[in-house]
Amino acid sequence: MLFWSATPLAGISMLLLLLSYFYPLSLLLIVNGVVLALFLGLVCIGLFNYLGRPGPITSGLLYASMSIYFLLGLCWFSLYNVINKLHPGSFAVNGTALEEGAHQSVLLYFSLVSLTTLGYGDIVPPHFRRENVLGIGSHRRSSLYRHHCGATCEFVPEYS
Image (tube, rainbow, N blue to C red; front, side, top):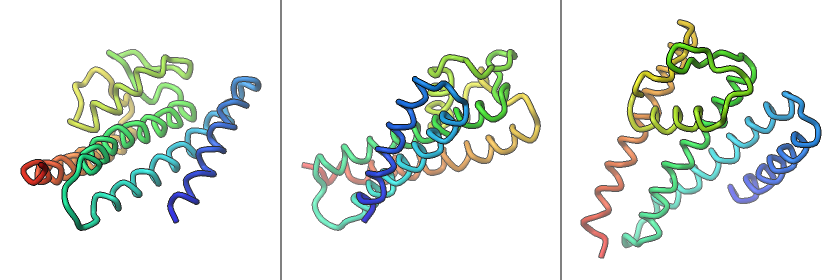
């Protein structure tokens, strides 16, 4: 069921990204970011369902478990791009506002760092309201990551 929902989203995301190269409109990139986040979220849900199936621990379960981490990071990276597109300067790097045309690796770094911890403080939201929203999201993501790592570590002793 999730496959039939996620596949069209992947196609739509690729089409929107292709269109944004030929027609560089912010709206195309915003819609693409939302569609991509939905696609990655559905893939994560599918992988979580796969992990929850009873049976022996296989290498496939361990690979799926580690894939979830990267997919969640990419999902939040996509959402951070949308936020920065809608409100340029929503993130500050070493005290300087991150503008709309900033390099993508900065937000990918922020996404992966805030997924595993509460961050290093080099990239922060400069406004109080955004700081609270991102702080709550970071707490939720790091809680999910800790739960995910704990469940994966349970698998390792059983894996042969």
